[in-house]
Image 1 (cartoon, rainbow, N blue to C red):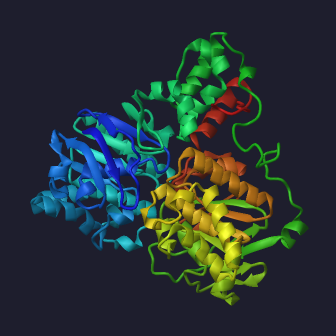
Image 2 (image 1 turned 120 degrees about the horizontal axis):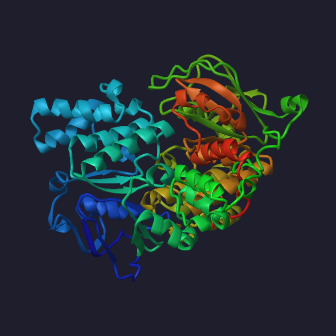
Image 3 (image 1 turned 90 degrees about the vertical axis):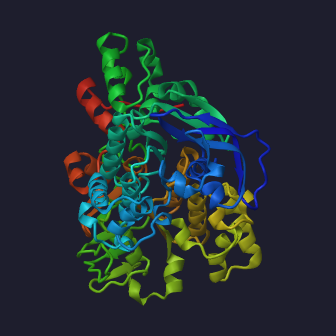
Length: 578
């Protein structure tokens, strides 16, 4: 794959004036592409598939070649024989009604014989864990299952080049491991060239041969082996707001103790070995690494429990009560009877495997899906007694797919829409819109269509829309999806500020590191039932509680627990990593 002075300008955007993008990816390489939100990573991926410029409007300059063939001179259908692309939004990729037909679609277009087609479909569904969903309608799949399907459809076509744009963004931790294991197996054959855009670096960093970093303007910053990029370019990556492996962040914290070992760990397993080797060789003492936990500082008390609220106060401050719910929904996930109590000012994480019912639960709370049995109470009042306008004024909801909630044709109008519905004055609306667009880095996009934003920018817009109305209960479905490190951190700190001001947060996420760092309480869903409800630290104290539900401890928490057993106390990182 080769980019030669390549650049692309979408309609309504002005050329950046930069010289263009140059990059070569060799046969058999696995390359990780990193960059800030909106830097053009997905655009670079779309160029390889030929969708740019053949299907997506805009001005492409320079050259992009696949095996020496210019993509501007080759139709996407012909390129599909060589290049398989998994889009950032799996719903944008689905064409057929059922899982089986979706995987078969590409094979039919390639003219694969029926007998071979059957074998390929069976194997692709097995690889991606969808064998039992073969006859299911795609609309009834969860977001994570749709993502698996997108990958299965590509794998079945057996392309020599794979372009994967955030292929695990909607997957639970175990599902993420499954996909990365597939990549390891593909890499081992040396028959595939892989370009992957991904921020789950802890699980991926040991797979890639090279890391390519681009800046805000889509210009090449560096291209080198992972250890060189993450250590020699750490300050620049931090400035750009790019994700780093947790092991690298912690190694930077402990660089004074680890420097004599001349070690550059990329995974937490490598970091653990480096710490123990440093101690064994007498280059550092165990207490150089001990102190307070790496996580939970600020969310929990020293005893490992959230700051206590008396039972009487908790009852008085009860905001949301879910008595046994039974969903009549015909969707794939039907909630079984479940119960949950959420008190004012709490920060909850709703976690569970793909298809567990997390998004379905959120839809019930918002009144978007009916509830046949049981009652949901908000502020002591049955939610079914609220009008849609009243409910929207009390609960803010960020959809799993931000495009599902856009209703206007300009970014600024999207933020203003809900405020108009609430009867705010034009002057007041203008002030709020300006503040929110500035806060979320969207001011320069105020007049463009929301669908023209990058996926990360769409997510920031959807959060800005929710915050505009100042609701008491905020429900966010995968709030950091598509965000670079800088905006993800700013968003999460913003949610903590809102919590401190008395707002209540319900965060649906597969990112267990987010849960560890920000949430006080967690509810674990599986097959529509709540199997755990309580403090996060209590949940994390037993990893066996997580595994049956598609969950796993964050790598840094595993490192903390393992080192605590071996060096006599939990490790500490009490300063900024970089």
